[in-house]
Image (tube, rainbow, N blue to C red):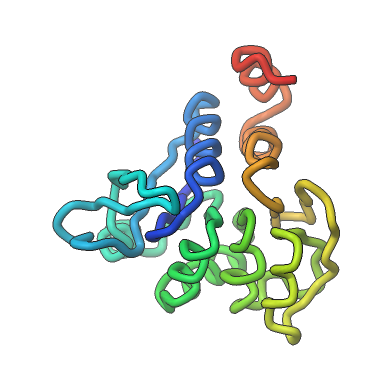
Length: 195
């Protein structure tokens, strides 16, 4: 079974985080939601979204890293939300984990501000085509810039990026297609009455 870890921090964008979780689980992918920040996060596993919606994650980052060790998921995913992306980007343990997954040939996915703000602190986008929330591309480390494209979502090898909440469904469906197959993606598409 394919596995995905989705990283949540205070200020995350709900649609960008939960649409991939929902669609991937519908597709039979094992998804673990991992909380990176929150108050009092260590006791409750609650992370609060950009619109003040509390979400209980499956694991804390410390617990996830301790229990999973070198067993990397097939995909690591960072949702956006300006504050959420900033909070994710301030976590060195997460950045190291993302780079480890990338170097091991796993899918790395990010949406909205996260491709620039989070992945931009790593070498992951170097030489790759990618997108993010328009204007945020300037916040990426210039040493690691690949080619920014103003498109709803971009897949370049194992890097999957999208520009914002409005692209969440396309982004999620691209991950379903990449991690399962066309037949499963079509079943999810039909079952959710997508346009």
